Length: 438
Figure 1 (cartoon, rainbow, N blue to C red):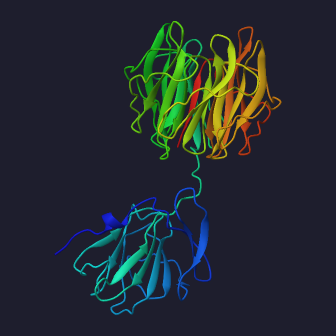
Figure 2: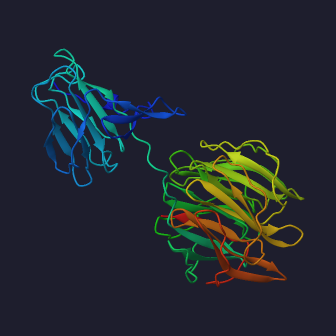
Figure 3: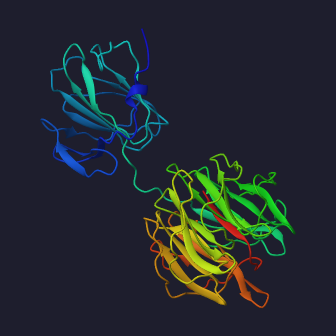
């Protein structure tokens, strides 16, 4: 007889083991939103060196960090055991989903099943704590939860694309925030579009003005290559905003914009880069707003013109639902830009408010926009912004008035501080969009 037990063991989110402690303790949590605490393990556990082999034999009373980066690991349990014997296994490199561990119970039962069953664990970050009960049930997992990772870094590189002309040229941003020279454009030249990330490491440009409102989109690969046009989905419009969302950090949303008047509908982007049809709008219809991520899995859309400049904001949940208006904070303005920084925070910057401005507003991990921060760098509008280096951001390009455009960039540190002007690279232009990739 054979079967797979692992499917009933690999249950995410049950809120058990979260981090290995010292002196025979394990850091545990009662579940989402509950405080983590260290709990004693009866008799203590002796932690061993990291195991990297394809096979190993476990000894009761020990804890084993298992590194499966290079291979699957088959673990043989003791051939005899006494009630209360304990063993802990920990996914050292967060790689068990790629290279699993296999438990050979060595003639004893495992969770009440005979040794003829196959027991596998295939969840990244998992911690497995087993105790021997008796001959009837054998080894029993008392915790087999995955461990929450440290906050994931954002994408390491970025891309600025399209813009006034209209044009379809792009400029890549390196992982240290350096802009590249112009790359010949792919796709229909347009301006007043938006862009966001999807799939965890890719991005997409969408909508805009080609001479008339458009719903075309162009995917960006995880190496920064723009694909040809994809036929539009949803209402053709210009001046929308876009950002990513979801607990898996792999989906996006376009929202608001201008047709023959301001609108508030939204269009979700799947983790495959497919744009969905219109979702009925929520919040004040407007154009020329900006959007960014916050809290690692949510988004925020703010500012814009309705047709008066506003500072109203709308939060986007981790399932892509746009919330009702939040009273605006900071100077009312439009044609600004926004990006994430520091893994879980955001920043809105620059824009037009009866004149070109350079102030910024930080976004907290709870989606609260702060009051104005005195501007740094050339005041301008119709610019774009994206992440780079995993936890930093960059504002770039834009219009300073009188038909004068810039390719100047300003770096944003991982604490949300905007740097002074960096001499521009590539064609100066406004009404472009930007997003990041990995």
